Length: 137
Length: 376
Image (cartoon, rainbow over all chains, first blue to last red; front, side):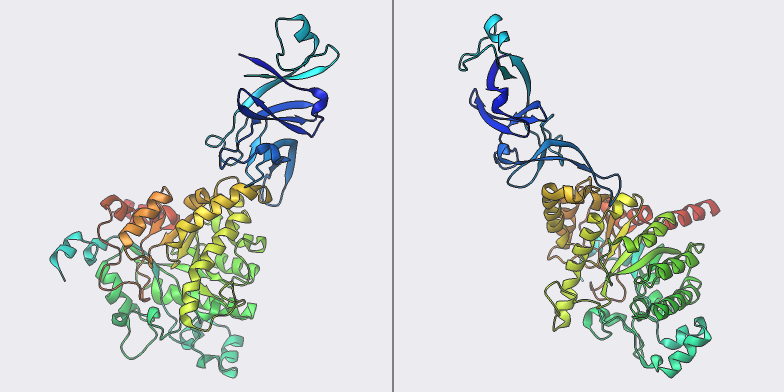
């Protein structure tokens, strides 16, 4: 497994997202209320950039006329056709088993991990004072 | 007739023995037939208002339009097509020898603007169907005719028939007063589900609004062609409004809807749902899946140049052979000779269409069927 430092935490405040390229792959990094999620940027339907989609909550109904909104901001709607993707799993809402994007494990690590341990951030200048978004591929 | 066509079999009446004909149209011959079933007030009103001079055929089915009656199914003396049980026996029941035939009476009673008048005449029509048809031929079953524009009165009429197991379905027109998914109609669906009766939606309009989405047509040909679009709109309404989420055991039978539009519809509906499903979050399955689970279609008319190919394509596209129900649509003119179904449909599918699917759709039929087997 390779670890990549993709951003500093303060580059992607809550509610924001950032498109990064790791090993030639476009990955969308989303900050939802302080929690970071990464998914493949390319919509499996027609290839739109999911990073350009609107963040939405999960809409459900226990019966007709009863609307429930939960998990605010944890899904992204494709900007072209509106398909919803779950940032936690990469699965589409309508066809979870058939239509999905890859989801990536992200961790927030303090700069000390890189300067003191075996990990190295080759392309990213790391400072001990900051926290970093780290992606495992 | 060529010999090889006959060997295919679907144009031989005996191939339909034991089938279930899901669309037969008995016609109220004249107002006098209903008089015994109306109360004093309405009997007097019929005379005072000269209602007995009205034909009261549905405008959607003008009596002399070619499609309203096959030429060889007319009745001597010019009586309304479908108004004679004797003729229906000769033309269909004794010829194809179906196990059951379901009567769907299309009549002005369903569409009267006055809710009370509609209810009184629907009630009389159902009584008349019971006495003049169901009680005179054990093969016959019927749909309950209701004043669909008044839910309370419609529910009362269904309740009145609930204990008579020969009424197997509730009949509505595809174009009534409101879209069929609306919650104001749900008490009808709730009761139908409880009584294990499908909602039969038949082509036809009450003309409360233009029968096409682009306005009023000038000609009959426009009106008849537009019916299938109305079916498409109503299925979408029922799915989007959550009728099948609310009533998971409810079945709907689209009668005389045509079939070939279905393929395009489910594609368009599934595709659009994926993008805007949050608007109708109770729709948790693709519309095509809901169609597969809840909607059935009678197979006259099919509306295709090659009807066998059209059916096979739909079975493939909808991934189901449960959806289609045999019907002659008597006395409407949808096919010639005895080929009520196209030849060359695989045997297993032919059996499903001619009887197994109807037994699965109409629990009241399969219960009667089981009772008959026990009695033997």
